[in-house]
Image 1 (cartoon, rainbow, N blue to C red):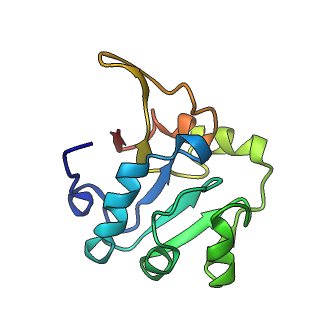
Image 2: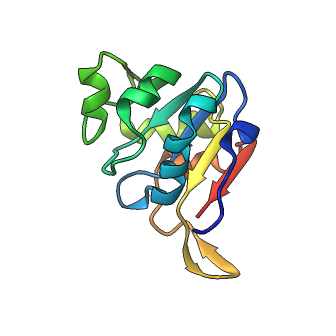
Length: 141
């Protein structure tokens, strides 16, 4: 991804941000988000299972309210910082809660697969998939 995204122009105060998880993490977008963290408005993030090195947990926790279903993967770092707000729901219920707007997501960051002109959410089968049609902003790599 050669272009930079200005997240400060896309994210509004109080927004909820979510991104693809595990093998579907949008690595380049998360690195950009991390690099711009100090310029971003206060918001919240809804984490799934993270495996990558971005965003930096200390930087994100200082700027955002961090919500997740638990402390697995890179979420443990937020738990260790005392910054993890655990949602008391079953993982299988989260896509339905997001789709109904009970767990809002305003900004979605995605990793797409497939050919140009025919992108696919092939790896994305969790709550972020349900957030795409409801989100105000969707950014994909």
